[in-house]
Image (tube, rainbow, N blue to C red; front, side):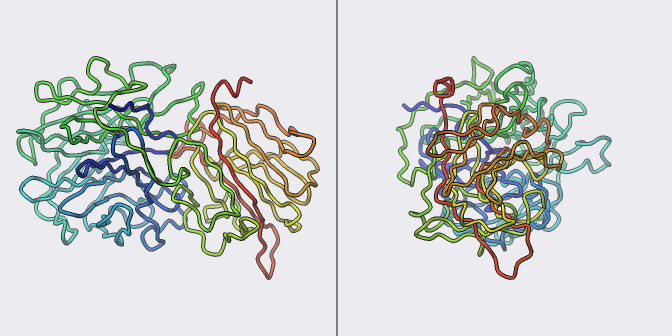
Length: 523
């Protein structure tokens, strides 16, 4: 027996999809305009996870030029069939719906196979017992949408060897509730005598819900569960600590037990900075219909699973939900947990015996390009990030330091430039200088301490902590204010405001992300 704690993946891990291969579980999440795309996790007990790579880790697989931070990759699905893994996804910025394959989930994954005629978003593949495969997705009502989100879930046979849709398309399901918005994220399962569509509706916000329909024929007609929505927190009120529940995917373990992964958020005083996270629930079938967390009807903080505990053997930094410390002098490359925006680093980062040389890019953090920003996901409400930066290596006109990034238009920078430290909060694309003071020491330690929607910023020298800003309100770095689909990331950056003949680099000694307990914060 093992105990899983919700969320099983905390922080920016939305739109989860899961598959099982023998006693192994593999899970992928949306990543939008971050590179590499679609983090892939592995577990054997559904409770403890390790990141084994990213599905899309080459520029040829993931064109993101000019994409807004909440564009790019939407809602992947992972499936396994006859020795091959399949991930199907939508790149809303370039190319549309596509499939990639791999013999090993760690990769390498194939180049994208873009699917002609597959309109809409949120594609899913279903491999039936007779060897046939079906594509399931969502698109605008074929008679013309009457309102924003007036969608239909459709099904069509899919030639998975040639990556082509074949046969007639079936407009299968309009959602459970009359005139519901955004019936999306559909997955098909064949269990017993029935084909089930499990999908989301209501939009990925306060009205989000999981619904179900079934049919004895893959193309329908489908009947809805009279208990729809079969799972939601929309009735629990704005003060309930877990909200926006939806977008579920079903998996069965080797004992025959069913579980469902889904997304939800944990706001702080009504503001969500971490984004949509991955949660787990138990599922049984009652009267031929799925019942999620029977006897409870909502997500639990913990659930017991009849599997042996899984202890990952990968580097600790590849594990989600843990403190991470990086000594750049001991590294030769970034781990799979690191991300950039829209494209990979090529010559922007160099590991040396003295630390990380990060190129001072000409693109700043507010541009829809590839700034010199390397980051990991915020995965706790209470945390502290630090970097040690050699300030004497910075040339006039360059800026480098820490960033808490919600989007190009909403982020917080703690930066050093021209022997001065500055705190800059960007809202609606407009930067506001909140504090500026002399900072001469090198190396300098910069610190952001976050408690919910408050952040305090310090430098550290031989005299101890030197405060710059205390308890700054960062509720603007939330989904509710900034909009979009992503959660915050944290990392280091370097920019150059001067046109030079030769590139210049900022030198970082280390970077750390420490998850804090409430007791530590109070002390």
